[in-house]
Length: 250
Image (cartoon, rainbow, N blue to C red; front, side, top):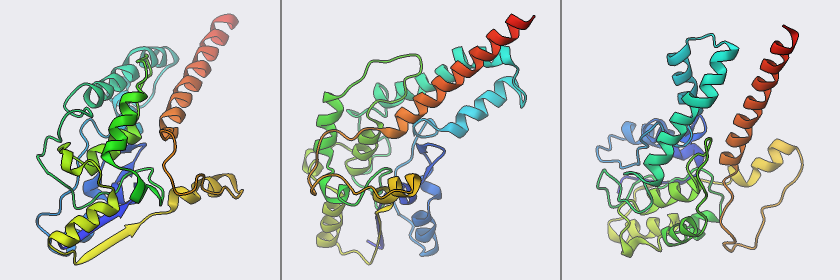
């Protein structure tokens, strides 16, 4: 194998709030420059998972133009945005991208096993078996602004065992590296991890030590999904307040 990549969001092609464009990430570009013809990486239909914010705005622009009035925002929040969220949720929870469906491309493995949200210890702790168990145990009820539940785990499962083969259920990122090294050898390895361990410290400007003692704990909380829901809820409240204010002054 010419090139094998282990990493997090940066190596995964994470953009606009979703695992979306692995074909544009730096490791894919390096593979192209090395002349690698069969560098395998996952693709993400519906513009990625859990929610591609850029795609949300593109759909709003297509439906309402570049200037959206207050009443149009009401329609957008009631119909346009929920329709897109439901489309993505349906594909990744119940459609061809669901956790119990093999990857459509047919690949048994990927040369890029980077997963958005991974910290350093996930490279040896997170396995498809663990992802399957936690997805099943932590399903959430659908709502008007629901995005894909357990999207972090679903993403990891899709990357680490695309065909859901039992013989690969216990393979972490580092296990896959060993597998390829033993089988055919690996000429070049990229490992880029640690950004998510430091992210809290950078954002809060306060030292946050990584939790745990090198052991897997409970199901990882999908903080991005929670932030998206809070963002949408805040938008609804702000617009409704504006509408109420406009009506009360007329």
